[in-house]
Image (tube, rainbow, N blue to C red):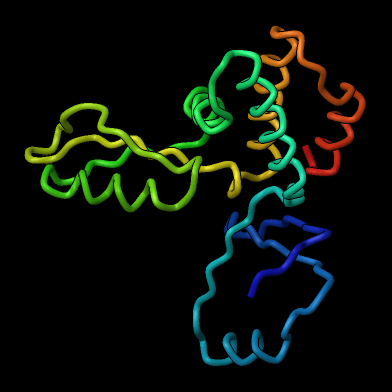
Length: 178
């Protein structure tokens, strides 16, 4: 069960242990929570800053700009997009067994245009290579998408390509919770 909390109160007991009181709205299955707690089961809570999911329109706008850049520099929107993903995108570096690297890269690359992997170097682990795997912007949160879009807009300005106004970009960012 995932809930959005709109109020948190922190207090400490006499043993200096933190007590967190959460107030939430929405569909919370109180009966399910009571049942879990009554059985003495433990719960796991992941508390992080709430961010509004960004609009898929922002991803579409990135591709519009990548197309304009591609036309200007005589490339393809796909290559332009991948360069931005590589320059400012989100990624993981994972040690993969030498004999599994080709398969890892093949499977990761099949997830979408922005998902691609490449071997960086031999890992410190014997028989492994470090593989960097980039995430496509379709899974970015608002903050990550804002970073990517700002980089693309900067490139557009350098190439004298018209973009939406800074005010409209700021409004897009505000809607993403950035």
